[in-house]
Length: 400
Image (cartoon, rainbow, N blue to C red):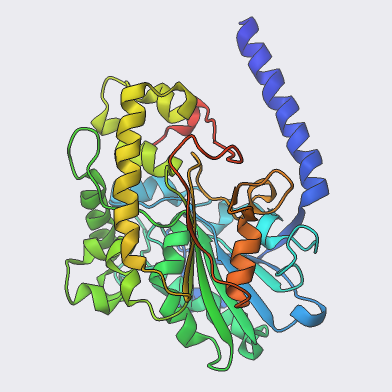
C-alpha cells in the first residue's frame, strides 16, 4: 500500500515537472476541425471530422509549411478498430482541444532555429492505417469508416485554402505511424503542393521493418497484411510497389523507399523501442514474459537478449540499405532505445540532445533541407553513444 502511494506521489511530481518544463520549452495550440470534410466522406473511424492544430508562420516563414502527422499504431480488423473508435485515435470528439508544440514544432528560434517561424501543423491521426484506407461501404452494425486516404486529402486541401497554395517551402513529416505516413504519402504530398515550392519529407521512427519475432514467426508481416485488407489500402499504396509485391508488403518502407522521387530524411533509433516491443518480442511471441523487463528498460536486458537485439539492428540496417547514399536522402540513425525523437525538445535540440558526429537531429535535418550539407550517419552499436536518451517504460506501456 505504501509503495503504491509513493508511486502515485512520484508520478504526480513528475507531471508537475513536465508542466514546468513545457512552459519553458513548448506552448499549446488549439484544435481545428475540418467540418466540411464530412460531406466528402473524409472522416475518422467513428465518422467524426478530421482535425489538426495550426500555428501560423510569421515574418520570413509566412510562406513556409511544416506538416507533421502524429503517430498511434494501427488497427488490423473490426475488433481492434472498434477498440480505437471511441478514443482519440478513432474519434475527433475524444481529442484534446489543445496540444503542446515543441521540438520541430517549437516557435522559439533558439529551440528550433530553422523552422520556428514556419506555419507548423500537427495532423491528428484517427483512421488506424497511416492515412491509406478508403472503403466506401460502412457497416451499419459497427459504423466503422475506413477513410484515411480521404482524410489526408481533406487536410491538405484545407491547408491549401489557408495559404499553403502559396508555399515556397514545405515539409511533410511524421512520428511512428505518422512517420510511415510521411513515407507512403511523400510523393503524393509533392504532387499536391505547388510545383514551384521546395518540398521534402521527414520520417521519424517510421521505418518499420519486416523481420521475424523471437519465436521465429513473421508476426508483423501478417499484421500489416490485415491492416491493408481491412482498410482497403492497396489502391492508395505506391504503385511502384504494388505492381511488384502483394499490397501488405508495400506497408514496409524497405519495399517502397527506393522508388520515392521526393527528397526524404529518416530519423530512427536502430533499437527502436516500439519495434523491439512489438515486432521483435511481441506478447504473442513471448507467452512467459521473459522479455518483459528488458522491453521496459534496455539496461535490464540479459546478455542473450542484447545479442538478439544486436541481430535486430543488423536486420534494420540491411532493410535501410535500399535507401542508398545520395544527397537527396538523408539519415540520422542513432543507437538509442527510443521511439520518436523530433517532437520532444530534449531529443530534437537541447544542450544534452543525442548527437551523431557532434550534430543534433535539428541541425542534421536543417542542414539537409536547406542544402547546406548532406547528412547520412549511422551510429555504432549500443551502448556506444553516451548522448542517448534511452526510454524507460511503465508496465502499462506494454499494451501491444
